[in-house]
Image 1 (spheres, rainbow, N blue to C red):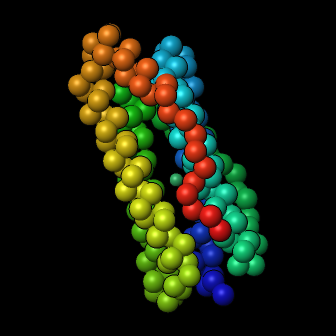
Image 2: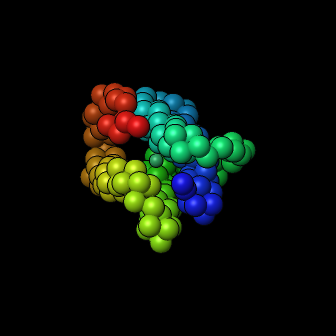
Length: 170
Ligand code: MG
């Protein structure tokens, strides 16, 4: 049995993960408009991953007989003016998501809900990787982004990212 608090937080997280997908799709659209199809691809793949996160949360709730409420997904609020803006907004967003996952973990811990803690372990690790990836992108952009050839090469590198299903199965 999941407690009401843990159930509610997990249900909220379904929405937050779908919002993440929406936000990254917004970033992808921005880069399409800038002619940077590699950056656009990177964020499109990222959006697919976020949708997977939402679906894993949803499935976990359903596996535990908790009804899922699908709330409205907010319009992405991101003022994008430079090619660096999405990267910085992306890192800030991942740091925020990490705080949400940690709050969820804390609620599960307080409820002695070991099953949910085990489920969330994957997400704790995943958030570490997401923050590293987001920070790496900023570093690369700082190093190469101001030079047209460097930006072109970076765009080519990001074009190579392909989608793979999450390693977590329920
Ligand atoms: Mg996520």
